[in-house]
Length: 280
Image 1 (cartoon, rainbow, N blue to C red):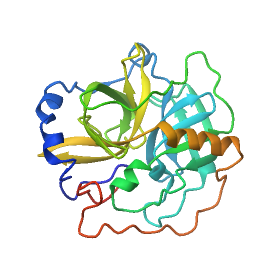
Image 2 (image 1 turned 180 degrees about the vertical axis):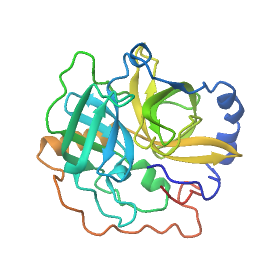
Image 3 (image 1 turned 60 degrees about the vertical axis):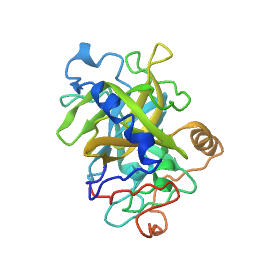
């Protein structure tokens, strides 16, 4: 549920730090390849579509046979600002053309303890926009292999994204080459091309010789007229979410207390970035 652009993301990370790498990142940005066939999708089956109880969909990825990583804002009703019933959320592993390699309902979910849903996209929201979902039953399928995670990428690193979107809801697409344009305080700015439905999509590094998840997509924006993606780092946040599940935390059903609305003052926060307003 990445939201509609309402303004430029005026990056003062500073602006020059992102803009200087913009041309290089865009010149090497690969085309989206739709993973329609079994051969094309082989190895990516652990990426799946998250159906959100009739309220749209996001993208998620397995990092264990019973754990799906996605964006925290996917679990909120955009109209009410309250959590969606997690038992209404279903993970469709490797979903393409009407069929999935596995279907699983969600049993429990945890989000960053300081995450507060808001229709505004701010640096604080993006850096905390992470959720971990525990499935009702593990997916033990030799064709659906969970991904490992890795440390956050550096500026200039080559990355890739596998995601669903509003115009490709029936099969995922792979953008194997895009780049990290900048990072600050846990927010990554990437030259990856994302759209509605790509929220929670895994961002991969290929440096280890195999794809490893290094971020998830939180929002889309524009820098100097070019479409970019915003993501959060994993690291300590993911470790804390795993620990919370291990300790019996998370919520199984029922809405959270009414969401706290986060104001953005004059449109800038501590990162110096002007963020876009959220939409669907």
